[in-house]
Amino acid sequence: AQSVTQLDSQVPVFEEAPVELRCNYSSSVSVYLFWYVQYPNQGLQLLLKYLSGSTLVKGINGFEAEFNKSQTSFHLRKPSVHISDTAEYFCAVSDPRVQGAQKLVFGQGTRLTINP
Amino acid sequence: DAGITQSPRHKVTETGTPVTLRCHQTENHRYMYWYRQDPGHGLRLIHYSYGVKDTDKGEVSDGYSVSRSKTEDFLLTLESATSSQTSVYFCAISESMTAIDGYTFGSGTRLTVV
Image (tube, rainbow over all chains, first blue to last red; front, side, top):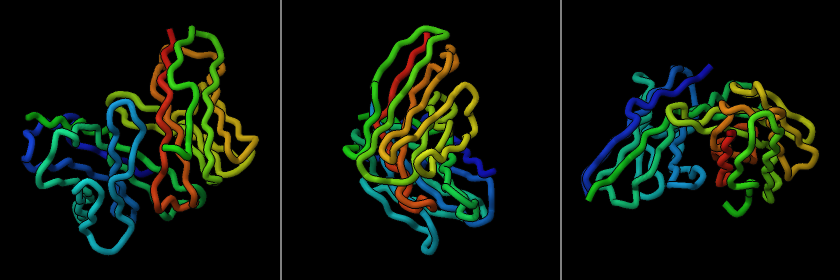
């Protein structure tokens, strides 16, 4: 079964600095990969997804992620963060080979805190 | 999200009592999911549904049951609540089996079992 590891539980960053949130998944076979953001007391919103094709994926709010098959990674990046980016971020994976409903498997989450 | 609502938003219940959480969607999506969110564990799948009366277990299904009698409603029941079931519960929906667009999530239900 697929699994996802988010290597940092908390990441503090100063405003306008770059940030990278790390995500590794367990399988080297083809996968679908997602990043979600959860603002306080809200549900999860889709930031971006990788299905196939270009390894650099751009999402909403200036975020992007790079798929690296050899390292089984899907790290999320933003060149300059804002206070409003303070949230929890979840990486998720699904296996398109599985028959039936595609179930997303989530990582443990990374809490991003932006300091002024 | 306007297309998916969870009720109640907050609930405090006593150990041993039954509890039912409701997920209601207006998107007519076939696939519905219940997850629980706990610190350090991210989101873990409890049960999911792939159509009316069609449900299956996820990775943490013990102590939970579900029902789906209509496309729009997916109910999660804790038959006899325990303190270990204190958590935030999220419902999610997906239009396609392959979930290539990801899921759409509700706002969550915060359940406290005392």
